[in-house]
Length: 216
Image 1 (cartoon, rainbow, N blue to C red):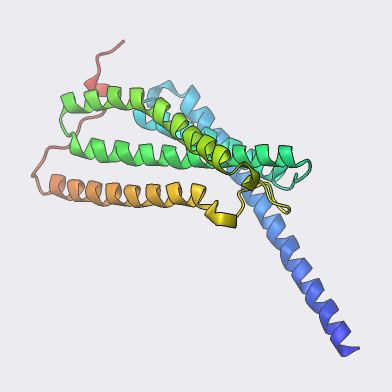
Image 2 (cartoon, rainbow, N blue to C red):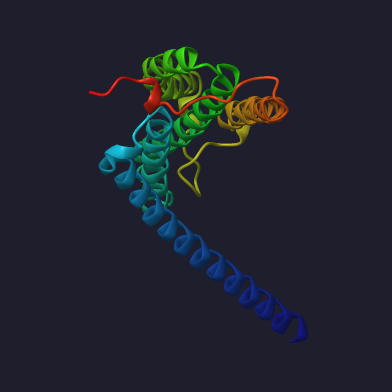
């Protein structure tokens, strides 16, 4: 009797913890969706703040918004298997795209710190605008297409519409994420070094992007 009672108490405690975690997850995602939507609208509507940096922020916000919207709606839709695989592929793409836009933001910070004259800064802005759309959306697509072609059966699991951990398939997501994290860390450290050099007077600080461009 005591063993049975103990099992029931353990099961009840576990169920309560899972329920609490689920509530926290959905509340957090809801707040995140609201903030991302407001951020995207701000970047779209406020003309005065629009530049290369806010364009990067806009695309990052959109990718995260779509990923966070799809996640609670479809992560548990494991039947039919084909639909589950499609959902897993979509989540794989959206989260990879989000991290790719983070990489582009890190690259923009790095190049801005390295190109500290008005001429170079204006050239940097044009370069980033041409580069970002191609890289931000095509690189994640290439990774997902190759992954799906290599192991299509590992998109989706019996419990969740996400990548399977079998045969190291999860590293098609973790690999790029770890690489982006490492590169961005290097970018940040280098940018901080450039900022210190600027404060010490070794280089001149950049002017704002808008001042480097002629009025329309």
